[in-house]
Image (cartoon, rainbow over all chains, first blue to last red; front, side, top):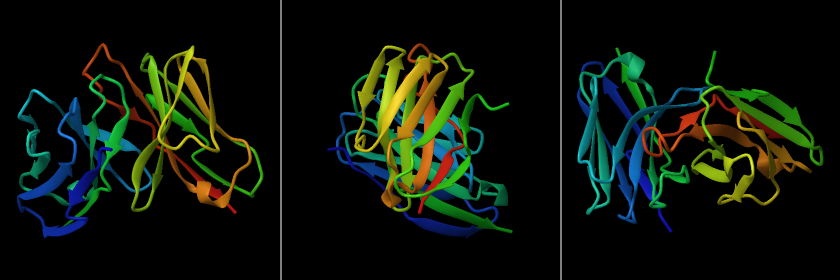
Length: 114
Length: 114
């Protein structure tokens, strides 16, 4: 059974710092991995999706990498801002097909203080 | 307007009551999902549907049922609600013809069972 773990569970940093969120998964036979952001009382917003054949994806100040063989992904946030404060979730699609039976990690709660 | 809309957003009910959570989408996606989020447990898949005639159980389907009334509508029912079904429920959609396996979430329905 696929298990997804996110470290750290919570992170508090001053504005402007570069930071890394970690996601590990136990079964390397994944189809893709998706990073989401969740704001309090809100739904999940997709940030980046990495296919199993890809090594990284970038969107603005965000960069996600994938090392399938070691079962790891990282989300790098450059020059953090207070508006980045949210819960970040990673999820793997391990079914080998493009359907949404995602396995989620428990999330990293990020606080960026001014 | 949101592409994936859930109603109600908040609901408080009593043990034994029947509850329906509704989801509608304007994205034109064939695939729809219901997830449940509990603190410390991440999101878990309850049911999913690949088209109007296709319904599948997810990881935690016991105590739940679903109905796919149309391509755009997917409802989740709790026939006899119990307190441990208190959670945040999310509807999601995906289209395999687009970015492979990317999911789009509604803003969630918070259910409290007393």
